[in-house]
Image: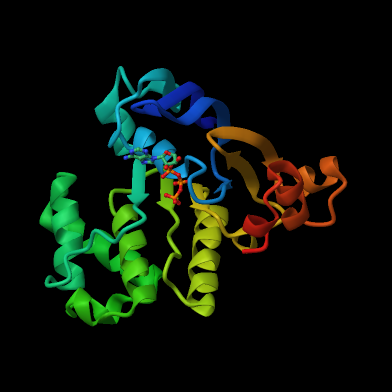
Length: 248
Ligand SMILES: Nc1ncnc2c1ncn2[C@@H]1O[C@H](COP(=O)(O)OP(=O)(O)OP(=O)(O)O)[C@@H](O)[C@H]1O
């Protein structure tokens, strides 16, 4: 059974007088890959900031499995695994040390942490790198470690903000494939923010955000069908009027 995993209701957000989000409302269905697609400045990071409580809600509400973020912040946060746009790994610690630190923050016992770290590193084919300093890893491997870390406490929702920035096309594709698999095989709800249209597959749910507003929300192929567009690049350009961003 699908349950609503994240509901964003009438969320508005301003930085001073600058409006970043304008009355955003959407509901994600759990167990699916959801792409939050918009050009730079669309409001994706602001929305992430609100969902992860880095920013305080000014108006509206966000609920995770029916629990209001403002009323039950700790319960809501336990459900979330987050990969931020900028890496937050400590470069001078080993892969395992970074993960153990995170597990400790989530109150995991040492034994449990070891088990979970092993499982997640194996999933990302990184188990043999556990003893290496993060500084020695390439960008793609660092990102894999960050996703593994975000999954340690077995969240039901994985949020990733532009996770492929700075990666070469092959590594980008691999990471995107990995996370798609996670969503399909584990029933994990994924929210993948990106400005890159080729990271969205026809079956993914896509939320197109532009200048702080939602312009479309459906599966990618439905968005194309409804607009009579041959592909998401044309649909995106049609909706946003931003041909350059669509071509990225
Ligand atoms: N700290 C801030 N102070 C003022 N304005 C901001 C701040 N952060 C973001 N903005 C503005 O809010 C709007 C939304 O920005 P946001 O970073 O959420 O977009 P984005 O889609 O994540 O883009 P990017 O991928 O470039 O971060 C933009 O107009 C941006 O200039």
